[in-house]
Image: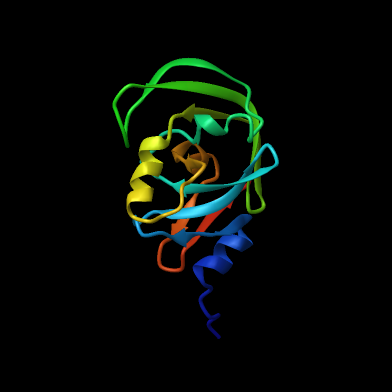
Length: 151
């Protein structure tokens, strides 16, 4: 007798993935809730962002200790923005946790001003490809779930 096929969710959970709910916003991004250094925040998922960023104005709130970086950021906003790097952070998304994780800080006012212009709440930061790669991310766009795996 043939066994019934399992769903994507069942398969991933059976293979040590954590299931995290994503919420669609008007800009066609997905936002998630995660904790940085034990502090809850709202972040958008950006598969095109190489790095995870937090708004520079929120440095103290997220208990980040940073130093200037020689790397300049570009993307949503002006090119060659100054960046700061904070090392040794804990990031928790659902049940997925990473310690000693580096996070960049930039001025996210351009992103949040764009969100404000479409009546969307501001975000605290951006989850980039560094987290998605470390977590072997699978994104179920239809059901609006992000799956991250501990290795």
